[in-house]
Image (cartoon, rainbow, N blue to C red; front, side):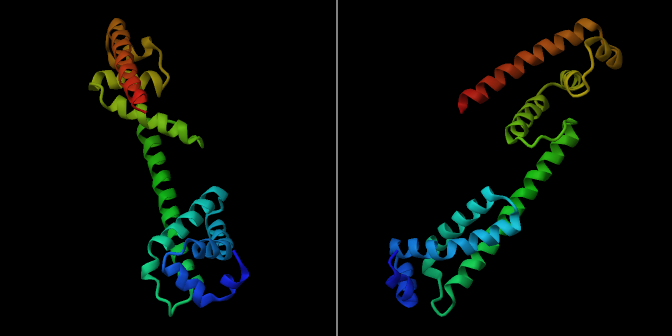
Length: 184
Protein backbone atom coordinates (compact mmCIF):
# COMPACT_ATOMS: atom_id res chain seq x y z
CA UNK A 1 0.00 0.00 0.00
CA UNK A 2 1.40 3.39 -0.77
CA UNK A 3 2.47 5.64 2.11
CA UNK A 4 0.16 8.52 1.08
CA UNK A 5 -2.92 6.40 1.65
CA UNK A 6 -1.62 5.12 4.99
CA UNK A 7 -0.50 8.57 6.03
CA UNK A 8 -3.86 10.24 5.37
CA UNK A 9 -5.93 8.49 8.05
CA UNK A 10 -9.18 10.33 7.36
CA UNK A 11 -9.21 9.54 3.63
CA UNK A 12 -7.96 6.05 4.42
CA UNK A 13 -10.82 5.35 6.85
CA UNK A 14 -13.36 6.88 4.48
CA UNK A 15 -12.11 4.64 1.67
CA UNK A 16 -12.57 1.64 3.94
CA UNK A 17 -16.12 2.70 4.89
CA UNK A 18 -16.91 3.30 1.20
CA UNK A 19 -15.83 -0.23 0.32
CA UNK A 20 -12.41 0.40 -1.20
CA UNK A 21 -10.62 -2.95 -1.06
CA UNK A 22 -7.24 -1.19 -1.20
CA UNK A 23 -8.16 0.57 2.03
CA UNK A 24 -9.03 -2.81 3.58
CA UNK A 25 -5.62 -4.13 2.48
CA UNK A 26 -3.99 -1.08 4.05
CA UNK A 27 -5.92 -1.52 7.29
CA UNK A 28 -4.93 -5.17 7.36
CA UNK A 29 -1.29 -4.35 6.68
CA UNK A 30 -1.25 -1.69 9.36
CA UNK A 31 -3.34 -3.25 12.16
CA UNK A 32 -3.18 -7.03 11.71
CA UNK A 33 0.02 -7.31 13.80
CA UNK A 34 -1.83 -5.73 16.75
CA UNK A 35 -4.89 -7.96 16.30
CA UNK A 36 -2.72 -11.07 15.90
CA UNK A 37 -0.63 -10.24 18.99
CA UNK A 38 -3.73 -9.74 21.15
CA UNK A 39 -5.20 -13.03 19.93
CA UNK A 40 -1.97 -14.96 20.37
CA UNK A 41 -1.42 -13.66 23.90
CA UNK A 42 -4.94 -14.57 24.93
CA UNK A 43 -5.27 -17.91 23.14
CA UNK A 44 -1.67 -19.12 23.16
CA UNK A 45 -2.11 -20.90 19.84
CA UNK A 46 -0.73 -19.67 16.52
CA UNK A 47 -3.47 -21.29 14.41
CA UNK A 48 -6.28 -19.93 16.54
CA UNK A 49 -4.64 -16.46 16.57
CA UNK A 50 -4.46 -16.53 12.78
CA UNK A 51 -8.11 -17.59 12.57
CA UNK A 52 -9.15 -14.80 14.95
CA UNK A 53 -7.14 -12.26 12.95
CA UNK A 54 -8.86 -13.29 9.75
CA UNK A 55 -12.29 -13.26 11.44
CA UNK A 56 -11.68 -9.75 12.81
CA UNK A 57 -10.94 -8.29 9.40
CA UNK A 58 -13.80 -10.15 7.74
CA UNK A 59 -16.15 -8.82 10.46
CA UNK A 60 -14.75 -5.32 10.10
CA UNK A 61 -15.23 -5.40 6.33
CA UNK A 62 -18.78 -6.73 6.59
CA UNK A 63 -19.78 -4.20 9.25
CA UNK A 64 -17.81 -1.24 7.90
CA UNK A 65 -21.04 0.72 7.33
CA UNK A 66 -21.62 0.72 11.10
CA UNK A 67 -18.20 2.22 11.86
CA UNK A 68 -18.53 5.57 13.60
CA UNK A 69 -15.88 7.81 12.04
CA UNK A 70 -15.69 9.84 15.26
CA UNK A 71 -14.15 6.75 16.90
CA UNK A 72 -10.64 5.48 16.49
CA UNK A 73 -10.28 2.75 13.88
CA UNK A 74 -7.70 0.80 15.94
CA UNK A 75 -9.99 0.94 19.00
CA UNK A 76 -12.88 -0.37 16.88
CA UNK A 77 -10.71 -3.21 15.60
CA UNK A 78 -9.57 -4.04 19.14
CA UNK A 79 -13.22 -4.20 20.20
CA UNK A 80 -13.99 -6.66 17.40
CA UNK A 81 -10.86 -8.60 18.36
CA UNK A 82 -12.04 -8.93 21.97
CA UNK A 83 -15.34 -10.41 20.78
CA UNK A 84 -13.61 -12.85 18.41
CA UNK A 85 -11.17 -13.93 21.13
CA UNK A 86 -14.13 -14.52 23.46
CA UNK A 87 -15.79 -16.59 20.71
CA UNK A 88 -12.62 -18.68 20.35
CA UNK A 89 -12.44 -19.28 24.10
CA UNK A 90 -16.13 -20.28 24.13
CA UNK A 91 -15.60 -22.71 21.24
CA UNK A 92 -12.62 -24.17 23.08
CA UNK A 93 -14.76 -24.61 26.22
CA UNK A 94 -17.53 -26.29 24.24
CA UNK A 95 -15.03 -28.70 22.70
CA UNK A 96 -13.57 -29.55 26.12
CA UNK A 97 -17.05 -30.09 27.57
CA UNK A 98 -17.93 -32.37 24.68
CA UNK A 99 -14.77 -34.42 25.19
CA UNK A 100 -15.47 -34.66 28.96
CA UNK A 101 -19.03 -35.76 28.23
CA UNK A 102 -17.78 -38.34 25.77
CA UNK A 103 -15.21 -39.61 28.25
CA UNK A 104 -17.83 -39.86 30.99
CA UNK A 105 -20.38 -41.71 28.87
CA UNK A 106 -18.03 -43.84 26.84
CA UNK A 107 -15.19 -44.35 29.30
CA UNK A 108 -12.58 -43.56 26.66
CA UNK A 109 -9.30 -41.77 27.34
CA UNK A 110 -8.75 -38.27 25.96
CA UNK A 111 -6.85 -37.86 22.72
CA UNK A 112 -5.33 -34.66 21.33
CA UNK A 113 -6.16 -35.76 17.78
CA UNK A 114 -9.49 -34.21 16.68
CA UNK A 115 -9.98 -37.10 14.25
CA UNK A 116 -9.91 -39.56 17.16
CA UNK A 117 -12.48 -37.48 19.03
CA UNK A 118 -14.74 -37.33 15.96
CA UNK A 119 -14.41 -41.08 15.42
CA UNK A 120 -15.26 -41.79 19.06
CA UNK A 121 -18.29 -39.51 18.86
CA UNK A 122 -19.48 -41.25 15.72
CA UNK A 123 -19.03 -44.71 17.25
CA UNK A 124 -20.66 -43.64 20.54
CA UNK A 125 -23.64 -42.28 18.61
CA UNK A 126 -23.97 -45.49 16.62
CA UNK A 127 -23.68 -47.60 19.79
CA UNK A 128 -26.48 -45.55 21.36
CA UNK A 129 -28.74 -46.63 18.47
CA UNK A 130 -28.33 -50.33 19.26
CA UNK A 131 -30.94 -52.20 21.28
CA UNK A 132 -30.13 -52.12 25.03
CA UNK A 133 -28.74 -55.66 25.44
CA UNK A 134 -26.61 -55.42 22.29
CA UNK A 135 -25.37 -51.97 23.36
CA UNK A 136 -24.40 -53.32 26.78
CA UNK A 137 -22.58 -56.28 25.23
CA UNK A 138 -20.66 -53.99 22.86
CA UNK A 139 -19.72 -51.55 25.63
CA UNK A 140 -18.40 -54.37 27.78
CA UNK A 141 -16.46 -55.78 24.85
CA UNK A 142 -14.89 -52.55 23.65
CA UNK A 143 -14.82 -50.09 26.53
CA UNK A 144 -14.27 -52.58 29.37
CA UNK A 145 -12.19 -54.91 27.16
CA UNK A 146 -13.95 -58.05 28.40
CA UNK A 147 -13.81 -61.36 26.58
CA UNK A 148 -16.93 -63.08 25.23
CA UNK A 149 -16.87 -65.49 28.17
CA UNK A 150 -16.55 -62.67 30.72
CA UNK A 151 -19.45 -60.79 29.13
CA UNK A 152 -21.61 -63.92 29.15
CA UNK A 153 -20.86 -64.45 32.84
CA UNK A 154 -21.43 -60.81 33.80
CA UNK A 155 -24.76 -60.56 31.94
CA UNK A 156 -25.87 -64.14 32.64
CA UNK A 157 -26.28 -64.79 28.92
CA UNK A 158 -25.32 -67.89 26.93
CA UNK A 159 -21.94 -67.55 25.22
CA UNK A 160 -23.53 -68.07 21.78
CA UNK A 161 -25.97 -65.20 22.43
CA UNK A 162 -23.10 -62.85 23.36
CA UNK A 163 -21.21 -63.80 20.19
CA UNK A 164 -24.35 -63.31 18.09
CA UNK A 165 -24.98 -59.86 19.61
CA UNK A 166 -21.42 -58.82 18.87
CA UNK A 167 -21.49 -60.15 15.30
CA UNK A 168 -24.87 -58.54 14.47
CA UNK A 169 -23.92 -55.28 16.17
CA UNK A 170 -20.64 -55.08 14.30
CA UNK A 171 -22.45 -55.71 11.02
CA UNK A 172 -24.96 -52.93 11.83
CA UNK A 173 -22.21 -50.53 12.89
CA UNK A 174 -20.20 -51.33 9.78
CA UNK A 175 -23.21 -50.70 7.53
CA UNK A 176 -24.07 -47.42 9.26
CA UNK A 177 -20.50 -46.18 9.35
CA UNK A 178 -19.96 -47.03 5.68
CA UNK A 179 -23.02 -44.98 4.82
CA UNK A 180 -21.77 -42.11 7.00
CA UNK A 181 -18.32 -42.18 5.46
CA UNK A 182 -19.69 -42.46 1.90
CA UNK A 183 -21.79 -39.35 2.55
CA UNK A 184 -18.59 -37.33 2.89
